[in-house]
Image (cartoon, rainbow, N blue to C red; front, side, top):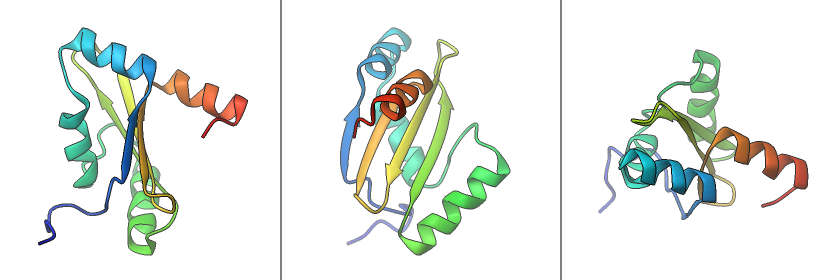
Length: 104
């Protein structure tokens, strides 16, 4: 049975190196934020980003972004690519590296 509170499938989940270290320092686990992300609780994003998330969820295409502040005051990003059914937990600087070196 599908959980009606979950808006989309996370698929394969990867927690990148610096995000994993930040969560460890904070004494928190990625699962805590992944649950919120999957329910559409996207934290510290703009209204435009939230609107785009909702459009992408309805279309079942594109990406869904969440930004959450962990207990150390660092921000983690969670990005689900609905087309590939994969989710990445990262720090913003890790996203910059992915884009720069075209890492997927």
